[in-house]
Image (cartoon, rainbow, N blue to C red; front, side):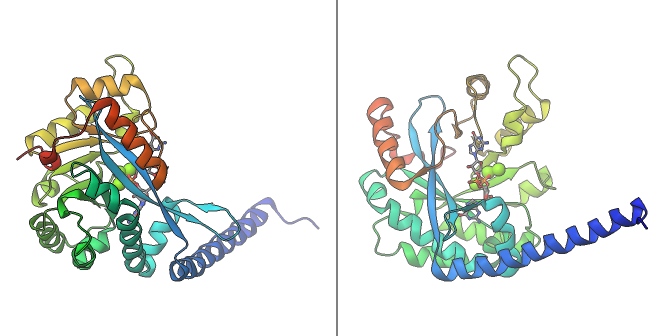
Amino acid sequence: QLLPLGAVGALLAVAGGIWLSRRRLSLRSELATAVRRREFRMHYQPIIELDTGICVGAEALVRWTRADGTQVRPDLFIPVAEETGLIEPLTDHVMDLVLGDMRELLIHDRSAHIAINLSAGDVSSGRALKVLTGKLIGTGIHPQQIWLEATERGILDIQAARTSLAAARRAGHCVAIDDFGVGYSSLQYLQQLPLDALKIDKSFIDSIGTHSATSPVTSHIIDMARTLGLFTVAEGIETSAQLAYLQSRQVEFGQGWLFSRPLPAAEFIAYHEHRRSQYGEAPEDMQNPNT
Ligand code: C2E
Ligand code: MG
Ligand code: MG
Ligand code: MG
C-alpha cells in the first residue's frame, strides 16, 4: 500500500526540519569548541580611496576553518554566535588577531586603518569598546587607526547603541553603519546614531547598471549620506562601470573584488606596500574626511 503523496511530503518536511535543527544544534556546539580553541583567522580586504586609488586600509573579516579543513562562512556562523552569546569571546578573539596581525603595519604607516565588524550585541552592551580600549593600551596603535563597523541588524536598544557609539567616537574611533539599507533602517533611525560613515551594501552596488539605468535607491543612499554629513564606503565593487559611477558621485571609499578579494594578513601587507608605492600614501588626518 502506497502512502498518499501529501503524507510523503509531510513526512519529508518533518524529517527535513529535524535534520536542519540538528545541523544547527551541531553548529552551535562546534562553534563553542572552535571559540574555545580559537580556530579563527582574519582576512583583510583592501579599502581604496576612489578618486586617488590610494589604499587607506582594510576591513578585517573573520574566517573559520574546521579541523578537517572545511570553511564555514561568517554569514552562517556569526548569527549563531549572536544567538548563543559566543559573540562576546569571538569579538575579543577577533580584536586580538587584528591587533596582532596589523600592529607593525599600523605603527609603520600612521595613515593606515583597519575596520573591525561589531555585532549589535557588541554595540548595545558597550563591552566590546571597553575591551578594545584596554587592548590598545601599550600597543602603539592609535585609536584613530581602528574603524568600527556597526551593523544595524539586531540593534534593538537605540539609546544604548547611541551611548556606546558616542563613547567610541570620543575614544577616537571612526564609526560606520554597515549593510545600510538592507534592514529596517530609515533616515529617522540613522539620524539618531552618532556616525562618521555609511557603508553602502553590496546589493545596491550590484544594481548599478552599465548605462544610466542605475537604481534610484543607490543614488538616494549616496545623497542621504551626504545630507547627514557622513562619508561613504561602497562594498562589493566588481566592475569598472560600478567604479566609474561611484567616482562620478564622489563616493569617497570602496572595496570589492575589482581591487582585491579579502587576503591573509601577509598578503594584505604586501598589497598595501605595493599600492602605496604606486599611488602614494593617504594623508594622516584622513580618518574623518568630514572634519
Ligand atoms: P560585511 O561586513 O558587509 O562584509 C562584506 C562582505 O562582502 C564580506 O563577506 C566580503 O568578503 C564580501 N565582499 C567584499 N567584496 C566583494 C565583492 O566584490 N563581491 C562579493 N561577492 N563579495 C564581496 P564575508 O567575509 O563572507 O563576511 C560576511 C559578513 O559576516 C560580513 O558582512 C559581516 O557582517 C560578518 N562578519 C565578518 N567578519 C566578522 C567579524 O569579525 N565580526 C562580526 N561581528 N561579523 C563579521
Ligand atoms: Mg563590514
Ligand atoms: Mg558591509
Ligand atoms: Mg554587506
